[in-house]
Each structure stands twice: as C-alpha cells, then as structure tokens.
Image (tube, rainbow, N blue to C red; front, side, top):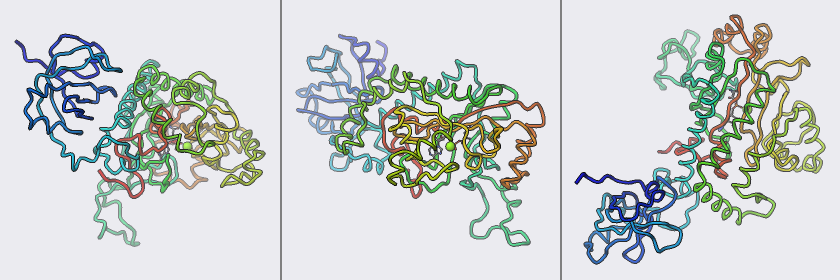
Length: 480
Ligand code: 4AD
Ligand code: MG
C-alpha cells in the first residue's frame, strides 16, 4: 500500500470522502470530554472535528492534546452527527507533533483584545480573526495581479533603495553603511556621502512611481506592487511606516479615464473578495458586529460588513472637484458649529481625514473621488491645469478609511515640470533622468497608488491598520 499523505482540512470538508482513511495535521483549537478535538490547519476558517478513541489511546498522549498543540491524526472519514459540519474523523491514532504547555500558551480559548494580540504577533495568526485576515490578504494579492493581467498591464519591480523623494515630503528612512558614531566628514564639516556605499545619499523608497514611469513610456500599461516606507510620525489607525502599494501607470490616459480605472479596480477587488472569501467574510462580519455593540450608537455602521462591500460594488462613486468639496465643507454643520478639529476657512486648505470622512459617510454616503486639487498641497509631478491654481490630481475616499487611493495625470510638458521643480527647490541632480523622460518621446501618462493595507482594512472591516499586516511597523514599534 502506498504511504498515505496528509489531506488539507479545506479539501476534506469540500469533498467529504465518507469511508476513506485519511491523515490530517494541524493545531488544536479545543479538546472537549477527552474525545473531541477541534482541529485547524489554516486552509479554512472551519475546524475539523477529530474524535479520539480515548479508550485505546495512551493516557500520556491524551494529556498532551491541549489548545495550541500540533498533532497528526489518522482515521476514517464519517458523516458528522453534530451541527455545522458535514464530516468528521474517527481517529485510530493520534500523534503529538508539538506540545503547547497549557500553563504557558497565551492563546487559551477565550476572547482576546486586538491590543493584546499585537503583543504576540508571532502567535496571533492562530486566531480565527487573523487567519481570516491573512487568507483574505493573500486572495487580494492574487486579485490585484489578475485584474492587471486581464487588462494587459505588465508588472514591474521598482527599486526599494532610491536616491529620490518621489512625494517630496522628506519623510524618508536613510540607507547607509557609514559609521554612525564617526562618519567621514567633508571639509565643511558635513557627513560625506561620497564615502557611503552608493557614493551618494540613499533612502528607502516612498513610492515606485517615478521609476515605473520609465517603463510606462515604453510598455504603455504597467504597474508596481511593492513595499514602501514613510518616516512620518503619524500614530493613527491608518498609517504604517512600512506598507504595500499598488501603482499602475498608463501611457495614454487622462484624469477622467484614470478615475474610471481606479473605480473599476477597487470594485473588482471587492467583488473578488465577496466571491472567493465568503467563509472568512462571514466570520469577520460577526466579529465586527460584536465589536460594534460596545460602541456608542452614532459610531456604529448602519450596514454589516458584507452589505457594505456589496454597496461599494454596486454604486457609482461620486466625482467632485476639490472646489465643490470645500464649499460643501465650509457650509457643513460640523464646520459651522466648530466641531471639526481643523475648521475649513476657505479654498486652499488641505483636507484632513475628518473632512474626507464627513463627505463620504455623512454627506454623500458613498465613496467619493475628489479631483483638481490646489497645486500647493500636491506633489511636483502632477499636471498643471489651465487655471494656474490647480493640478489634475484625484483621491478616492472610502467610508471608515478616508483616502484609499491618490493619483494624478502627470505633467508631461518639460518646461512646466522643470519650472515646478525649481519653484519647490527640488535638487535637479536627483531627478535628471525623470526630467529627461519629458524630452524624449513624452506622452501624457496618468497613474495612482492604492494603499494595500487600507484596502484590506476596508474589506475585512478592521478598524486598525496594524491588524491587517502580519508585522506592523509604526513609530516606536519594530518588534518581531
Ligand atoms: O497619496 P500617496 O502618497 O501617493 C503616492 O505615493 C503616489 N506616488 C501614487 C501614484 O500616483 N503612483 O499614497 C498612495 C496611497 C494613499 O492613498 C494611501 O492609501 C496609501 O498609499 N498610504 C499609506 N498607507 C498606509 N500607511 C501610510 N503611511 C500611507 N501613506 C499613504
Ligand atoms: Mg495622497
């Protein structure tokens, strides 16, 4: 007889091969009455019931079947008399692969706060909540590539170490091999980066956009999907110092078409989750409903998680100019009654998350795409509009999140771009190659960046961005 191989619990529950002998392996969630193991191997949110033959199993083994232990069980698939599961395993043998001392194992079967679980990020994936989030995150990575593959976009790897600050916000992590205590100095007493590894100043990238634009102006439709780093000291539920971004760049595309692509893209991701992650979403919906019970009435969402996802999938996003948005905000109740932390006095103000969420959650009750922002609050590469005041930028705003996408049509005219670079005092020596793209076969490209974790937050209904990435990096926090 050939050696039996392990079957995954997901496959087993789907196929329900009653009568067959199988081997299952996984981690014990609970063990009841010295007999019933709830086993999970991460292939699905659903546990498999393994019924141990306790009369014929060594007492020593029975004692080691505890929450968190890793076991292997061999037995027959039988129809389950219990509710909520089609089949279970009548185990003839159980082997302990890894014990988990019940005195010490921190994930005993009870409710744990998300804050506590962050402190044990190496174990939290063994909970239902985090395994569901990890599986959905995986499904969304696949859906991102599928979407662009179907549209004929090429995936481009852009560098993680760069010499340029794409967003011009100066919030970068330096990459250096110089001695921090005794760095080489120039004659004028500054750190001499000519002596550094790359013989210049380098940082971790804040965006792959500038580099992916080079590919765009040869391959037409391209995208990056990589890690990005921002040393901004924002301790909010929507900011990470290390996050993943998807940045498509389209060669022959104006702002209007770009907004269409952004809307189609996020709706595709939402639809993919609804169609492929139903079990995990059902669990996360219950989790969210439970969490919301403890919130004051006015902070509760009027919709459940799945209803919210369907709502986004089925409704057209509102498109609104920045100027129109300012008018709405200026006249809004929270502004009149001075309830906003940052009051909107007039045109030119940078929008804060409270304003974005007011527009989306209170005023329109729908995702909103804002466009044509004042040039002074946006990056240097955005295309200048004829009015001399605004640029062809757009942000997609989502309920509970605020900005989920930021993008623009790019300034393709060399003179305009160079003038803006000078005006903002950006060192041209770092950007010569980017400027050169506007000299040789320039085209009007457009592109945007989707914050992957913010998207996962929305899809999973998780309030804090630290809970949708395996190992969050935030100010003062790089454990694990
Ligand atoms: O608006 P941002 O800064 O745009 C860019 O980086 C452009 N280069 C994109 C492009 O046009 N190719 O960032 C894009 C998105 C934001 O809308 C937000 O969703 C996410 O990235 N994001 C963050 N997510 C988590 N933590 C942070 N600190 C983030 N900063 C931005
Ligand atoms: Mg932005």
